[in-house]
Image 1: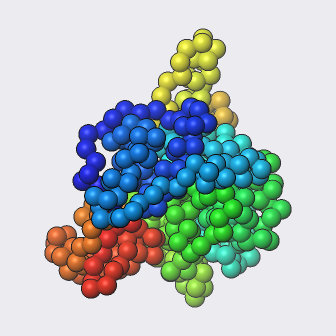
Image 2 (image 1 turned 45 degrees about the horizontal axis):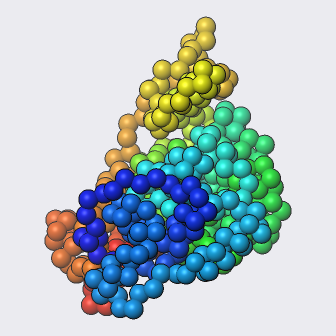
Image 3 (image 1 turned 30 degrees about the horizontal axis):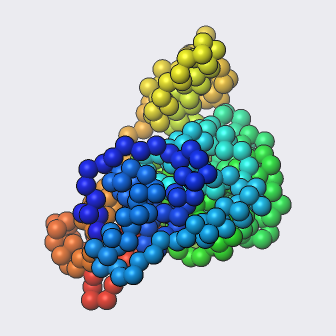
Length: 422
């Protein structure tokens, strides 16, 4: 739909009643309404009920005839199905919605969760990698997940076989979040059924797809952006040069998250993507200490924020806003000069290293992705015109267009035309 139809924003609040939640679900499930359009409609009309009433006229103005939002009964059937499987509805802006996703421009308006959403309140690190992982890769994923858990980080991944499953298993005791490509009640692959039940019992499973939805190819890039969005950093353990893990890494860059990678042998195809990321500037990971070096300020800031919230709760005060993602790095030190990370215990790397410089090549890719998406909208644009507008060589733009197309963010149409997807 034409985003120019939306004008000045109107303040709104997250839904508080069953009727409000039903309206939110109807709006996001209606045809051609993705997360970006949803947020623009709410900004324009103030609440979902008003947006639903205006939606047919907005669609007509965009050239869509005989438009009909989904019915109350259709949305109600999904809510009934969610109750049967024990799923909880999390709405954007509500206290139980993951704070890490709030600043994403395409944050899902509605998430379904099975388990305890509080698992998403601890600082999270994403561990992702190959489905056909090597034995060394699986060992590395388990070791990283266990040691990061001991240091106070939860693990988020995609519940796939291989690296994802190994990371989830090792993090069950410390906290793990599984983001699913299909409905939160649909376990894929089926071999991870027991693991999925363990995660629901001790952590949280999450999905933006409708209850009962079977995972499709286009859902996996959407899932990957949530894996990276929930995390403070993404660690790629094993990945081929063209893999979903690299799409997660690129989504992380677009979202301003750190990207790290475990190196591998040049002759091992499963290490090609990781080696490529390191070549382009990703932080090299030899063990959990390398991840903790990068994230120590984040953990220290989380501990300080938790102490402030606890202190204000004791005084009956309103909790302060959530601490920023990047801490100021002023955590306490013990008598030996080691960072303690506050009440959460001593961070297990007694000699902090100087800050690493930013990853210039990766940042440039993320900036190019944003520049491309900023110039695209629902109305198709010629690819050669886009390249001229960017004032960059075609050889530099074309590969990133393919990446965005694989991620499901850009659609290629006949005649060399491109449009942006929600």
